[in-house]
Image (cartoon, rainbow, N blue to C red; front, side):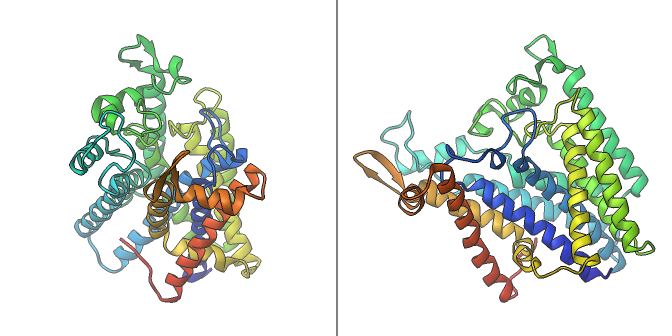
Length: 396
């Protein structure tokens, strides 16, 4: 298997993940979603809950491949550390920019009915969410990459185990301040778990996810096991890059280890429930195993079976993931909130008009919502395809 073939399979896997992200993040109506396209309410998982860990798993793979390539070019550890810190900071700042955009609160402010523009700017800063998806990617990438450059695969397995077991112990065996109970008794109550207390204490409720305000799904403590997801990806990257083994051996290894991780994750879920919002250790193993099996399937279809006619569609999404995430987030915010006008029925956004007139007027609610999301994915295919044809690949 050549480097180009391996990277094609990885681009396709990443493209599947990015296209899935666009699909689940942009329904026509959040009140009309097919269950597999919504996150699990708390414990448990749906296909939607696989997207974020799949992307972090891919980050681990590309980090291993990138660092290996840079070492081969003669980069020393000091140079690699500077590159890692720079890239991690840029990813984090991109996420912070997305949280802050457009720099002022454009929706009505309940406590300030006659808010000036300056009031709206200050209100936005006072309620800026510090963490988020890109911020977690930046932090997990930085920590994972710093571990990777200093350790071999055996040490990485040990570090991953320490992170996952340590997080399990912290979340279940430590008492949660203000409750008088151990964490294990509070796992069913999102706002009372240890990670929620830590986020409120260190960040403040005004700077947490606006949908909860009492806890953040991309919070500080739950980013620790997310580093484990990156390390699992790095181990997979090292395995598929081991050219002394045949393609069949590498595929068999990925399938076998991925299946084992899924079983271990499901079993661990009996005592530490599978939960994306908490990024539990069982969730790391389950989703890491599924990511390994999915990657192995892509490699088997593309490289072993040589079935490639379908790959270009997903490769387009996989080449510019940062553009897709940032651009789609900005577009969704403009359509769903910033571009709006007042009517007799209240405030109406451009997204609501497009959905109502273009989809909901002739389809059942769930079908209309799904078709809108598919159209959104299609629009971004055109944008990303245009960029690919012109060699516009954005990398940090």
